[in-house]
Length: 207
Image (cartoon, rainbow, N blue to C red; front, side):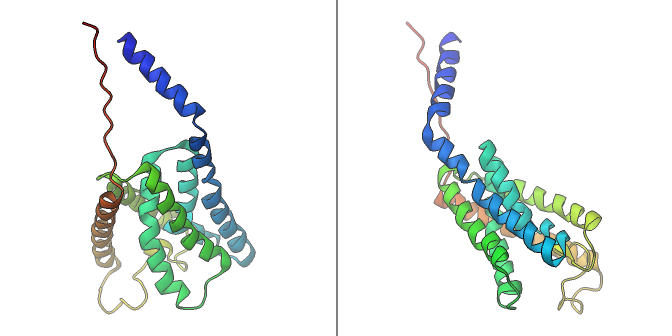
């Protein structure tokens, strides 16, 4: 028991002195800047409710995860940068209605996310955290954002799908299932690329 405690203290002291950890946490300022740029943009042009989109709030949570070295939070937000970039590219970039802050939030967000994943790696349950976060943001979006913005598609059927779904809740159910499957698939692929290694420390007992 004494040997285990000494080893834990030694490992903790090493982590505190390791300069690479400090530099790693400093990366958190990048997604924080991306988020604040979006705050400034929507504060100037209106539509602050858009900050609740998964991509925008994801940059804030990624920054917090990096500052706190919280692996689960980092992994969950990093997973969301992938579908977030695809959705943004299809509905915003191709429409020509993007801004510099929006480009930074999505392109910059996924770059930082993939860089930090090389360090924290990806486990097999991170997608579940990402999915729970999505469900939570669905509730938040319905309660605090304007229906006109349809943030996170939490208020009404996405434009163009009205003839396919007779009610919003049918649309929401199908979308939720697809989101769960997509997050699971993304998490699986990322866990193949950067698998989370299980580190076991063995302490030999004195004879």
